[in-house]
Length: 415
Image 1 (spheres, helix red, strand yellow):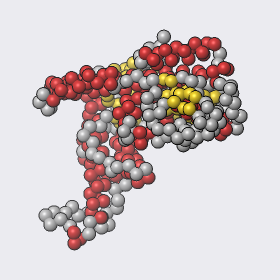
Image 2: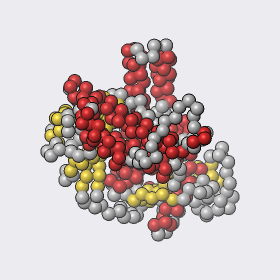
Image 3: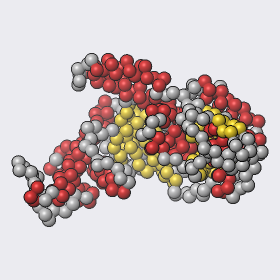
């Protein structure tokens, strides 16, 4: 089964915009009420009698069941009969809000995440089922909202059915994310002939086994001066005033612009890497540790984890390229030519093998080791003299050289 999510910008009228804001407000109230109900039930079960509070204690009867999703959904159905505010919102939307909370509790237990927090603002809600014949030219028909205009930046996918829709409120406006599904099954991409190793780094965004170093544009640092000025102006405004809200929205728009620029650059780079080879191998790295270490600012600014774990695998899948992760241990210490390991300090940026005398940039050597490990994993022979660049057509080589020049300039436009 295939599922694709397309994003379109909404163009609602004043009535539809007010209704969207009302739905967000009601969903926030339902989420916070359900979370408080669960927290109170847990607090009443873990406190012994002799250590209760002297002033007051919220007591729940012993036979009261745990407020799971099913119990809270039944309570919500009963409350809708007497509460006109709940009755004004689609029932499935409120049920999806309860499912979001239930998912947060399950992830807290299974993945070790933190306890769910109360929401000051809710930025999205979901319509889990779409209406029949809901897709029109530059408009979409949604439950409760009716026909709503969109900026159709790309056509709907052919042969797929609209499954659900999510409305997201951002600083630049409202967006509609439609999930399209198809019952067709897609086999795994086969292993090709030309292979490419990609090494993630901090000094360079990525290094390839063909000998190229791609530097990351400073997405946040390039806008940091303007961001600081806006935040200084915000500090002098009265909190909650109209000017304070306007500056808050301006800062949020700037952050959204930075994120969109980073996202666009990642997609273009992923397509360029897919032009170079049939197989792409990367390291199996936990990038969450990078975001908490000494290089957290550079790592978060470049978005290397998003690129390696999300965008590059998706582009490889959509273009029929083979994508795999290899063991990350000792990739920067192993010689790609003879396999001998030399310990290097982080400040040492060149690889100089003491066994065979092979000299090359440290990141490029690590990319070659990643490619060799990937070839061994898929059962191909490793030949150091035969590089992936030797089998790339002339047209692709031109695109590759264009990418390197574009990366060196640090802009988001191709030559």
